[in-house]
Each structure stands twice: as C-alpha cells, then as structure tokens.
Length: 253
Image (cartoon, rainbow, N blue to C red; front, side):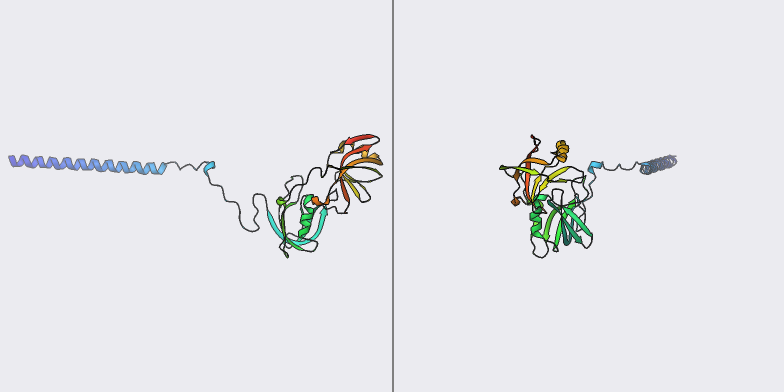
C-alpha cells in the first residue's frame, strides 16, 4: 500500500510541475506579444525643435555668392562714368563672363580708383549688389591692377568732410548753366570753368526762384582737389553755403 501511495504522490507532483511550466510559458508568450504590439504601435520620435536644427553652411568657393552677394570679376576698363554733379563715380568694365558692367563707387574715392587703372588697363574688382534698394547696380569693394599689382580697398579710404573748408568766397554770376539730375532736381550752377555744387535736396524749396532768375549772389567754399573727387570737366568746384536772389538770401548748407 505504501508503494502505491508514493507512486500516486509522485505523479501528482509531476502534473503540478507541468502545469506550472505551462503557466510560465503562457505568461512569457503573453509578455512577448505585448512587447511586439507596443513596438508596432509606438509613436514616431518627434523632430528636433527648429532652433536646435543646425543651419546649412553658407556657400563657399570662387564665384559663389555670400550673404552680401559679393562677386569677383576681371576685365578691361572701357570708361569712367559720372553723376549729375559731373563727378566721376563709376567704372565701366568689359569682362569675359558678365559682358560690359558698370560698378559704382563714392565720388570722393574717384582719384584713388583711377590711380589703380586707366582706360584700356586690365583690372580685377570685388563688388556687391548696390546697398541702396532704389538703385539697381553694383558697388565697388576693391580694385587691383593685374599688371602692376597695385590695389585699393574702398573701406580704407576716409570719408570727405561735409564742408571742405571754412574760407568762404562771394560770387556774383549772370546767366549760369542750370544743372539738374534725372528727376529734375537742381544740383549745380555752372559758369565758365566754375561749378557751384548744391547738396541734393537743399534747394528744392527755392527751385522755382532759381529757375526763373538770371543773376545770383553766391557764398561758397572751394572743394580742394586733394579730397579725392574728380570732376569730369576739370572744373573748379565750390560748395554753396548761401544763395542770394533779388536781395533775398537763402542758406543752403
């Protein structure tokens, strides 16, 4: 009887172990299924915020435009151009790739630019799109003579004084040539080899008087040639301080 009871007891233990293993296997399978389901429906990782996304690097290399659209080109100087005041303020180049282009510079840098390259000489220029939104064109940064190696950088040149000197002269002129800009604004009076320069906009309020008058009293200061300006007619240029018309004096500086 004892042997039969022991056999029954061992059989019961085997059944319990088998049932326990089955439960464990089922639990493992359920856990694996849950993991698989979680991986399947897991939401995608959100992208980095915009402020953390690295910006693309600026373009590099020859001929590539940077943030200020800087360009480099070589060509032969075919002309120097001038503004309504008859001051030279642009260089005209015949290039291989861009054709004929005109590049502006500030009038008081004309002598420095022209000292680097004369007509017919080969130069290399750096320039950018014109900073003034109202003007379509280019602005000179630097110029180099390809034969001599001489160069100038525009930023290295000092600005001109607003009033070139404090020594005034008085003039009385009759029937001068009236010089206007492309918009009809009065920019100067010219008499023989003398040019009397008005700062833009400062005589707009008396423009009708100037246009109707034939005789003018002018107080002006001489603009010295050493300031770097180049007048295309080689006039003696005076900066007008005041204008007298019909015994009425108007300050214009």
